[in-house]
Image 1 (cartoon, rainbow, N blue to C red):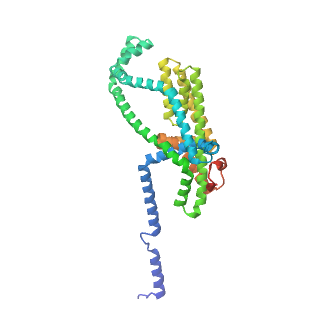
Image 2 (image 1 turned 180 degrees about the vertical axis):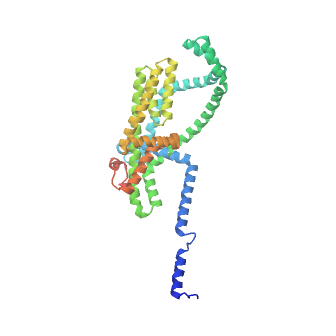
Image 3 (image 1 turned 120 degrees about the vertical axis):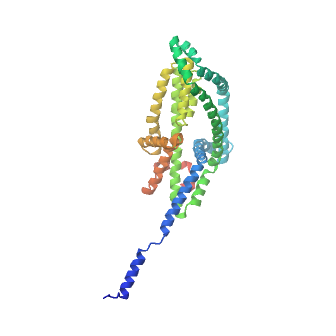
Length: 382
């Protein structure tokens, strides 16, 4: 005998069934999927435009490098005081004068020696591939006939590798010309950043962020600005240390063009890895060509690299960026693993910027970096 369900029981059962039904697609699920797709699209766009983004980042660094000179001229210029655009032009004009003086002083001999070396490269590579250079090396270092024959055999056996070096040089020169063309845009873009950087940042905040988040975004931008300014100052300090070291050591060992080589080494310190390696290769090559204690010079350069990377760099950047020196070393190693040379260059300021953003969300207190850079910021970010 079947018991008939009451209308009240049927209503409760129907309500339970409706609660168990899941609408698909749910609004929250659609929102999450659209967010993931938007993030993936932004990542794809950033990857496709990675060269342009890198060019913009390097332009920002160059603008921070020029900003102290522009600020000084803006407040102390004899002709255009308190005019930002005129101060930018004056700073660029001063840099062009310094470059012209450097070219006039050092470039003729450097260009002459470079062209001479480039003309000799095919002949040297041909002698290496045939093994004829073994006789020259043996005569220079007093080798016997057996040692010369052994070196000649090794060179002939690796003839294809030596011939491939010439192709690699041609390919590298073509890439270098393209890179120089891209790098020439950096000071051009930096002009707009130096002149209108504050208005660009303010416009971006007002355009892409709602009203209730603009004030906190201004404070975060304020602190990131201070971090980037401190990072560039620390890099300049490291370059000056390298310049002093190279110049002193080269003068002690009586290398030719010691001051010019020291200045070049200090400037190339801005370029991670490749910069100091190029400086070391040039100095060691000059030492070997002139028989000027190149072995001891190699040991000193390697020792200085260890001091610069594991003592000077972590302390200079860590002190100025308010992060621990161990964090600096870890950021540099992680950047090298992820992005190579570019990752090394961007790792420390990126890590410091992420630290500022995280601190602004978890512990929104004013950083001492803000006080240090207060004089460089507009009133809108104060």
